Length: 256
Image (cartoon, rainbow, N blue to C red; front, side, top):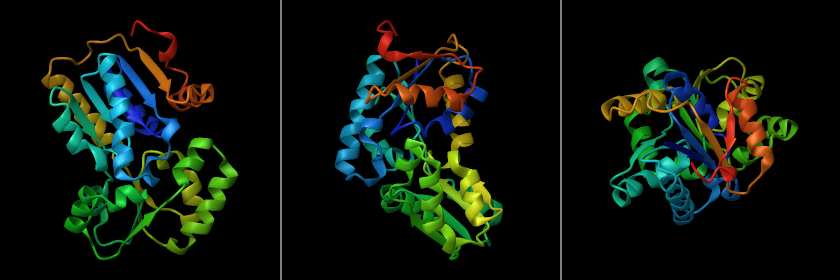
């Protein structure tokens, strides 16, 4: 069983890429909407919430866990690897290097949560590849709007906060929720190149499965659980993944 978690349904943008490369595994996806958004919380609180999720996933047999959340990855992965040495953690990070490699001399906007942008791990990445025409923007509250699915509120937020960046070439989506609103962002910024880390994560997971001899060892089962037991979340999760996948409610399957 492979565990995947996010502060909500944003991690589905990562999960969709994972399913393209490793469709025959068994997965359990944990949506921690009870504590969404992680990005506006103190680091200690983020780790406390993440630890509860990790303990749950381990209890369901997950010894490989994908952190499909930039904030949780930036803040927690080092400590998680120390505390759970027998668990393989695959972390997310903003695709700033990818944007640098693609168009290092172009204006770049990094959209992320406050916790991600202030994290030591991200700042090290940023300073290593900074092209001196990069703007860092903490999109406080945006992930929560996306989680709620309020399109009008999302558009109003983007117009209010992003209009001043119109003309940038690259946009790094430093939160797994943000790829869900690429079209909305493009309406404000115009034609831009989007970068996120989902493809890299899916490739890393496949490498780990091959190394451990676990590739294609499942039945393609997908379980979903939400910390708020919000039935609308499983509906949105299923809609985002698409009709090709059967989603099982983990709260009703004690024998996982």
